[in-house]
Length: 291
Image (cartoon, rainbow, N blue to C red; front, side, top):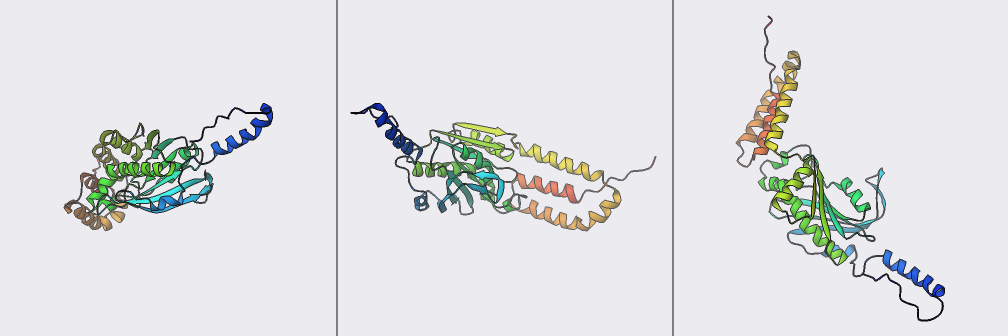
């Protein structure tokens, strides 16, 4: 790093020496850090079971044509982590080229994850953090069909993707800036809150600080509650609606549920989800008698 203290003038007046030196010092201290690598050079970085797919400078501008969200200029590194043969953990790291505060902040996902939470990465980047996020090892966040027959992907979603992203992203931070982050944090809400609790329990040394907002943890209890809520909703629908809309799909629901329950690779998470499907499609309204 440059020493920004001005040297003591050897001759002349203080005024005619300190102005040009001050301009030079400002230019040095506001530019890239000494020893900082180029963004493009990170494309050839070799990391364990990780492939860097792209590394490029991104100019300041809107995120995905969303005018309301402006992303500062940054070095964007994308990669895929494959700790197992069935793993496909996509992640992204955003590095401020100037004004890095020396810290690293990783953001969590929501729902079933399924994409890199780049919207959550804008605020920490604008505050000078090197920031990263992951898709938790699968694409698409509308359900858990990706977990059927893929136990390693379920483990990636459960905890491994966040940990691996932290390890590889911090290695990228070191390669870019020439030094480690002085402090590292994780921030997540909902499923990101669950990820935060898993990190604290399984990998307490990964981060100096963890924020777990509204954590969607204790899934056995949580999804059982979802199933009960769905059943209550369907029981209040008119009987004629259930006859017309439920019965045609009953066999399909049972077939899907059977496939889920028979598969040897299903974990308790997907079994509970199967119960939720039965609650949505195949619940009959209880018969009542007029008194």
